[in-house]
Length: 87
Figure (cartoon, rainbow, N blue to C red):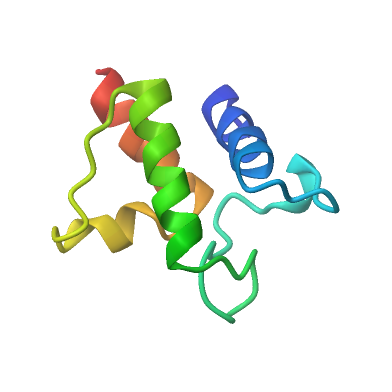
């Protein structure tokens, strides 16, 4: 797990106040949303994550863009998004 993935996991846990989950409990490639395993987050959680990504990394996320769902699929895909904006 890279520093970005670890940072994102901690950020998600703190932002969403997921008290019973540790960063090690979140697999990098596990789906963050839906009932397919992973965290089972919802659209409100996505908004909160989007806001914190904008605040922390300066990433502007357009919810109308087709790629937004792909970026928010997992911690690994969010990390790739952060790396793209940091480059």
